[in-house]
Length: 109
Length: 115
Image (cartoon, rainbow over all chains, first blue to last red; front, top):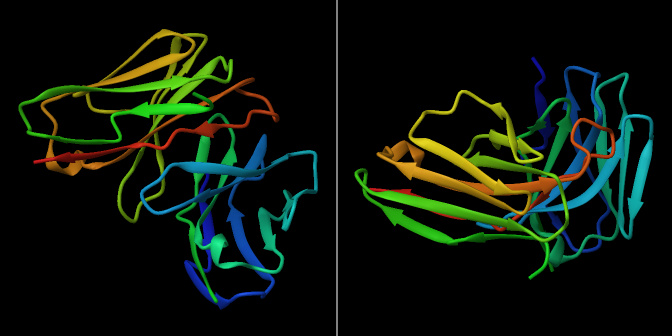
């Protein structure tokens, strides 16, 4: 059974820091991995999708990597800003999306 | 309207009420999904429709009844709910289910409270 784990569960940093959020999964047989952002009480915003044949994807200050063989992905946020404060979710797609419990990020000025 | 929309955004209902949640996608996708997000639990898939046919029912209680009349609309009919059904219900859509390029796009959710 596929399980997805995210660490840390919560993170509080000053503005300007570079951050790494971690995601691990137990079964490497995935189609892709998606990173999402969720603001409190809101829906999910798709940030990056990495297909199983890819190693990384970049969008602006965000960079996500995928090491399928070791069951790991990282989301790198460069030069963090208070507007980055949110919960970040990773999900692996097999025959369905399986989510981790998220990392709650707070960036303070 | 763009993306995936959901109505209502908030709903309070009693255990004997019948209500429906609505989702509409404006992305031209061919698959739609219902998810449940409870406090401190990972998002759980409830239903999947591909080309308007249900392909996944994740052992959801029968008090939740989905309907997909066309590829752009998805409903979740609710009846005789329990307080533990209170949660954020999220709708999503995608193109190319079952492929590496399948990317799901989510709506803003309906916050449901069952009294």
